[in-house]
Length: 222
View (cartoon, rainbow, N blue to C red):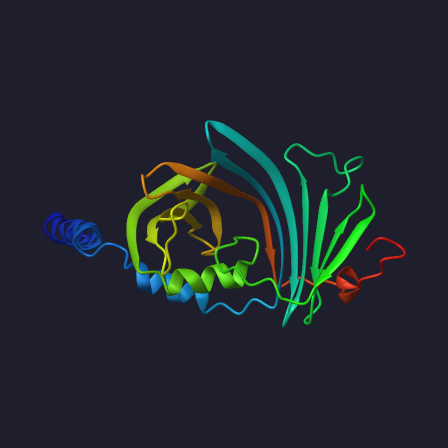
């Protein structure tokens, strides 16, 4: 390749790269497109391990949550201490929804009762499919940029929910770029003060989960 042709090839490559960079800045990530792509993903089952903290009156309450879902209607949610031991700590509360009722059990107190109502709160992050659908219905979604943490890439969004409350006026949400699944959520009140922080320590979707996990046997204690 002679020098003149080589010059034009290099110039063409640089112009292509510049055009790509310029396009990225002029046309940033469209939030609705990413959210719809995330929501449209078919999730038939999932397992989550979440660490969360709620803030009120200058104090913080921290706890962990393990959650399982098996489509179409099975849910199991376990509430544990924030820094729990897999071998020693039993859940403080267990919620199981079997398609008809929500069963609530306190293993330490051996206390059990049933509520003839499903788990419905779409803002609860451990109801992953409901939560993702609520993003699609959000009043406002604003792309905040990209972030790299521990060699993982994330999209960051500012979200105004469809229905706001005093303690839940907006959310900052980090979606993992590769999977478009949530990895961190910060909830703010109407005075823009943080009220809750949720960190997804483990997210596994569409893996085999046995229906036995959602069976209710009060004599054996779930």
